Length: 126
Image (cartoon, rainbow, N blue to C red; front, side, top):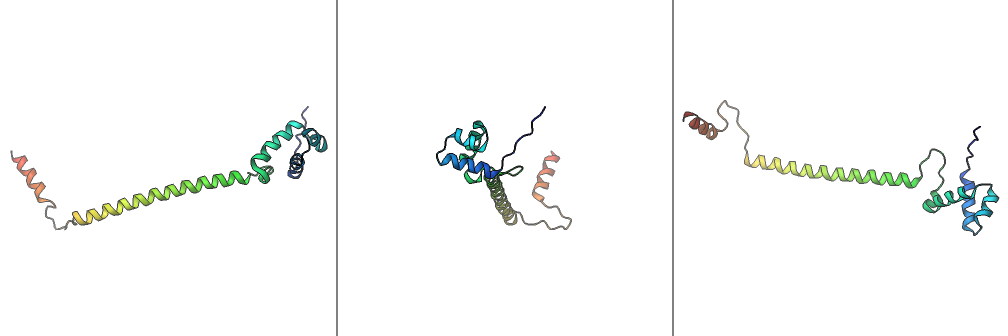
């Protein structure tokens, strides 16, 4: 025989935590709200870790986790932007180098580089 799982409201949890913060003992608060002292300790740990953002409800992520993952995503995108900016700078410098040191070949049917052709033909003759 399975027992139904009890779901406590956020308001009840916060009221219990405020009662603990006010100085009531764990046993007193447990009896007052009809919950187990172990459950109160679990709630207290979450309350201390997240404060007012604790107990977000079923299916909702706490804002702290969302902001942390958002910050991680922003940092990842900033790294990617930095990497792409470096690649763009490199490619611009490379393009400038080719413009300055390698003039475009005129397509006239003549050999593009006669020196290399001449060297090959000399070595081939031997």
